[in-house]
Image (cartoon, one colour):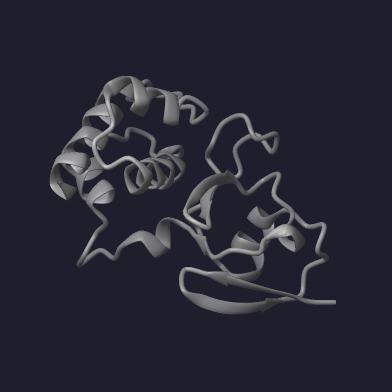
Length: 152
């Protein structure tokens, strides 16, 4: 049994059971390192990806339910041409251990695609489900604001 999904602009015929969490397919079958396993319960946000441009937790999304294109951290930008959110996170040094960063960046990019000039409250609300155990939340909010300014 196979499932066809589009990830970062490329179609993939994945062999995993359709009931397999998307996170496992992304990491184990497609070799992507951006989405992380954090809690497996959709509570920490480390596994966040975009599906059809919206932020989703890949640890609880079954691969067989995916019908829209998936974008992971690897699909947002490149080292040579980073996405504005990626560049802003670097400029603001919005990571310590970095484990949450992928999910934060992907969720922030989805927010800015929907609302290019969010308020602080909208940024906090959009990232509320993404946990940073290092406490870099203020830098993360600054990075999202910087990215919003860069894309204005």
